[in-house]
Image 1 (cartoon, helix red, strand yellow):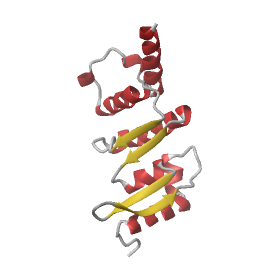
Image 2: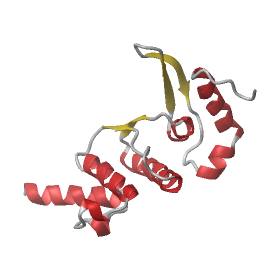
Image 3: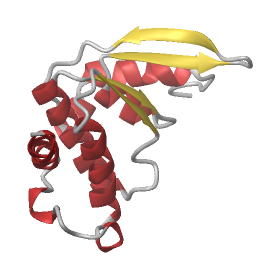
Length: 150
């Protein structure tokens, strides 16, 4: 019985990240983006209430990164899993988040807590071109000590 349950959970997790056709591939045969999706599926197979992600898309090219950002949003919407996402990419933080925490100084302290009230589902083009997105992005950059528009 346990094996059957395990197989169902793995199949569901692979389907969530669109890798159901690659279940028997060796990791080294997968692209970098597919390998990241396998990591997400591995975590999802455990049915977590919280998914902790530390710079998961940092080593990916821009197109793959954007695709995985959108895929992560779909997975989160389908599963309801809370995602805690660590990134140094301001645009990624604003695009993916419902709330951004900017850490400052050492030891780290919260320098800014910013609610992100952008409509969902989000789109790489229209969301990132919206005045609200740009305003939020500027607030995060300013919290990091960057002057915006000068």
